[in-house]
Length: 280
Image 1 (cartoon, rainbow, N blue to C red):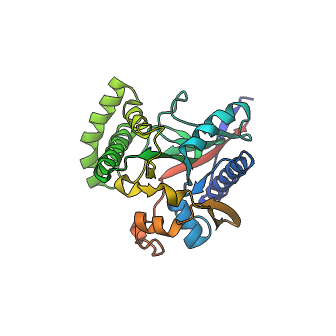
Image 2: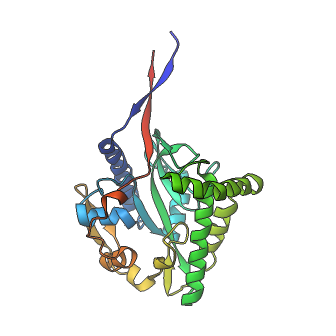
Image 3: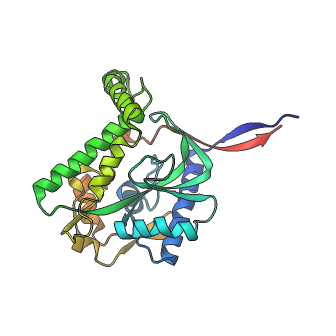
């Protein structure tokens, strides 16, 4: 008999369970190696508002100080994450993003708005030093955001979009970015982002931010706030670490984050998540 591959499509509940397992194993690894991590962005909103996942959300967001992020990169070379987990960071073969991911190598993802198939992941964003000058910082964070957007356009399938109008507006620009990445390499934009991430290395600036793939000029947070003792929040029945002033920064990023968004905005990544299994 010939062997063929079948797919087991995962439901949202199963995706949440798999994501939680990645997060839990990662957090345990960080605790055992004295690495700092913080739940952040939508994952932190989920913890505070729902004590777990935002029901329609299908990813996990974590931040780490750059020093711990770099230590993690080195540690896994000699003390790997538990199988089937792997760390991917900028500079790894066939990985082009300027931030890290912990992936489950046994679970696969096909995204409607991304040409690159991948594995189920959680995002790991480094927090980097940024300029103390407000205007300089604003411009550099805006530039990083713009570069990330260009990279996304250059890796999105042509003639794709969340509506016909968006598809028609997006496709000509996306075609240009596809051509740029083809000619200059698929890390053309993310290398520039990585350079911005490291611009203030070795300088103890007053502010830090997720430069690698963040929210633009909203990102800037006080180092002294971040360095306060961490808080703990419940997420799917387990306690995880986050920043001390989490309410302050969620309000800065999102406003009244306890208010549910309109139903039209309750969307995830539009992706198929599956396991491969052998059949006869």
